[in-house]
Length: 489
Image 1 (spheres, rainbow, N blue to C red):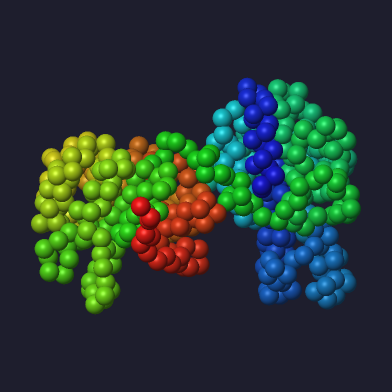
Image 2: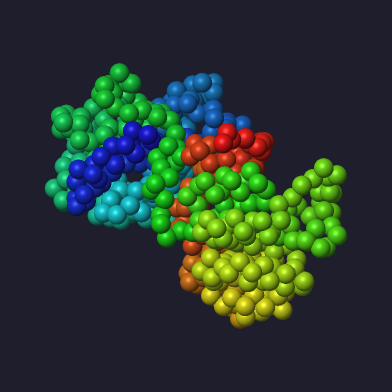
């Protein structure tokens, strides 16, 4: 992925006006064919009333989909049954039923494809050894898998093998590259899991303008057949592919939890414009403080110090940053926050108010709207997930009601298992969406690929030299100490 990112950047720099294209093989490169093997073999058991594969797991399959005879021998299935199973497997595995229902993508590959499809004047082509007879089923299957990732494959960007099953596959791959080049595309990369196919393409790539990438999954041809300059890898890692400088400019990024001096310093030193603070009343109720957890969930520590809203707004006002308030209560808290905002003269373009509907209620949101009609007014709507999935019109009615309260953006938890379906429906309704609770860099980049209006994240991204105080990958935290540094006069 590092080499791919670098090669793409160079190609775009050298050929700024050209149609750049990356080509992907399908089987073993986009699709994890172990799932197809497992699905078809278990279907044999169901069809024939046998139990040969009841304990078979995907991790047990270490052979190419064309070498299932070796797997059957390893499982010590009687030879006569092996022949029967293999005949049935070969008859069924490329039927429409199994193409449409048994194929699973490799982890991260559709996100990588989505990234390139988002880039200007850049296209993703498919260069497969599958025969032409599977064109319709191939597109239906891949577009079905790609839907939730916003990935779509078109007929004109699919090249298939004109020679038929397993015939002259290397020549078909070369023909595919030439086909797309003749159509006006500059092919800058080709990804395939078979060394023989990469070697065939290398013969028409003497100047190495096409980066050859080996998807090191399960393959038939010998590894020694790989051209010496091939880039090799086992994972499609977005964090290695997408640099910070390439983030879309129209997405608003929000640094979550600017509730203490250390996190405030990290935020002020970053290029992130928006910072979110959690506003609540102190235990006595005389001061607005910044604290994520309530005192009921996390009782007051005798040595606890907190950052005041007053100090935060003073720093943000002086540095030109924008502020997102996560209001932990309604009533008097809303009134006091508005007083502080007026004191520091933030204009509406730098203000964002977020709160739960049950806490702020219609009266609180109306106050915020009246005081700052052009600010962002938002509430989380994860409670609508069940309705959006099964009774979308009822969900739309609730959103319309909240819009009359002044809401102009709605927030979705990244951890919501239905987030992609949820987001798609909100997008169809033309509703601005914020994605929050994004814990690490990989999740952050996956959220970016959905292209929401905004993303709120902990920015605990050491790879980008950001160290937010929120929970990172595997719930790891980065701890910091604040110390004064004396300066000589």
